[in-house]
Image 1 (tube, rainbow, N blue to C red):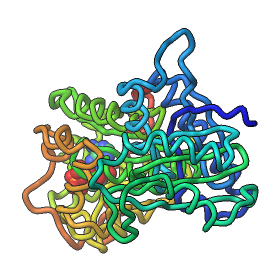
Image 2: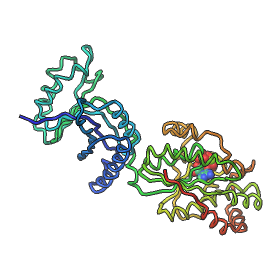
Image 3: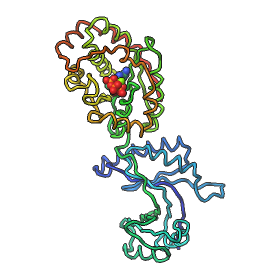
Image 4: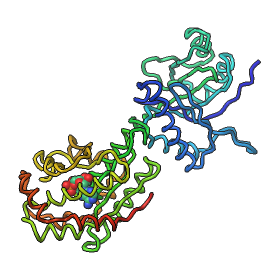
Length: 399
Ligand code: ATP
Ligand code: MG
């Protein structure tokens, strides 16, 4: 006699996390659990998170005072949306869970329910996974489950796969694995500061860093009031999309027009872009230190524009100590656009903006600057005081 009970929820499989040592795994799992808890609460899901060695089970709490025996579509769709945006998952599947069930209970459950899952002419395959607490052999289990299913078996190309996972706590029954985002749980790999322009590239760059577990803080340089607030509004809109992936996002908005004007009036056109960018990074490094960020990240891609040649990248970062990460360095524009579409930032990022650079960018920027010249020009400008003032005018918004 058993006291089995049926609930529903989602079963989660980890990606790379599974390859780590025990201690690291524990940390990563804690990050993942925090992340899921935050987003599921935001979706108002009433759930319990059960942790196994290589799985999480998000169990939807049974409805009290309700005649419903299964969760609503709204709840399931909301949960799937959260899981679809969670880093660190190889796959997830909506699942039944027969708690405390033995093989007889499982067999009975399937016998009663399979006509709902399989039309009379459909084929099926059982996929079995069990841990050491399940004593029956694979053959025995398959035989016991498959026998009462009056449908044809097709192991190669079935109409439906029925996945069965046996554990000490009970049996999971599910049909469809949905691919997760992969990567590592967010916040598990420290913190970075990403330079975000509002254009197409920088948000996907930030997302790729988040995918590998780095928590992002954003930094945006704007040229308001010399130009409209459009770039600021775009960055806000992008931030609101980004918090689907990272629970909280801090964004720095820094006025850049005074510095740009100084550069524009005092340096030759050829070198202006390099100087803008050297100064941007200098400021970014200061802020990154203050925020305990261990690296900067940008949306630069090799050779995309003249400031992104190897020669110029070297000049731009020459004076920096902090590592600069460029996750898009080997991406073609087309690949970046595809990623921007996938993460749903593309439409926002292509809205027109007179971004701080387009206003100030000369027609002919050099693709192969000389470091000594850039250094010399920068020294003459003597921007330290202006940089200090700019930093004081920083505005912070939390999303
Ligand atoms: P994006 O599409 O991200 O704007 P881009 O192709 O226009 O990139 P650049 O304008 O050369 O290229 O900028 C390269 C990178 O420098 C950006 O991806 C971003 O990380 C950073 N960057 C450029 N402009 C700004 C800005 N106004 N504020 C913050 N970061 C910026
Ligand atoms: Mg840009």
